[in-house]
View 1: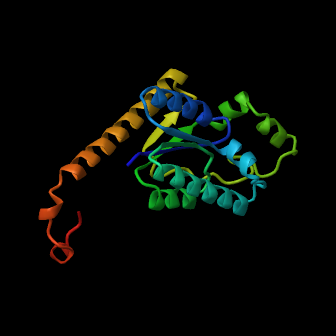
View 2: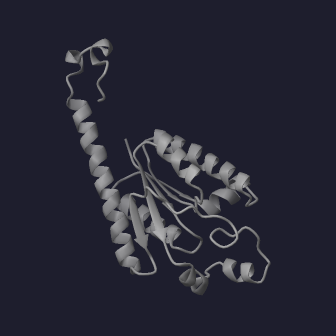
View 3: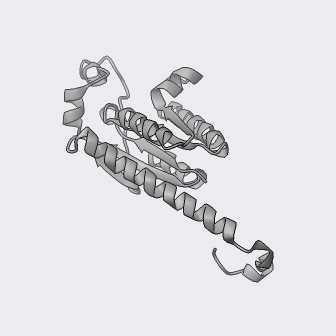
Length: 198
């Protein structure tokens, strides 16, 4: 079972950059990787609109896409704002070996960076529903990793993400090994396991 590493955070926080670096690293390690970038996904599949219902529909579609890639044995990396906690809870419920990474950055730093010009447009009143400014961003409460890209260098941020990926891959390998070594023919029947959580 391969992991799903889902990078979330406000626009300009560094999700795509970190996800791209991790993809390159994992590919050099021989892994089959599917990298899903939120902006490219929306353009590729024709998702438009930024109302809450549009965002929910987009993330639902992205989750289904990731599930299909995961079923093919790929390590999945996602970089998407994913602003609402209900979206993340669905991820936890439906995605195997899901790891949530909050790529966190202060709004002050994001306005200074403004790599896509969104914050300047919002300030001029030219852009509605910018997450973290004029639309909600629920702070993650169950992130497996928080990467503060306004305090850490790119190298430090990447190393933290890479370490999480390696730990999760090791967990995946350990589980596969245990499963392969289980003497299934000697396992008790379902009725004998009632009341136990395995």
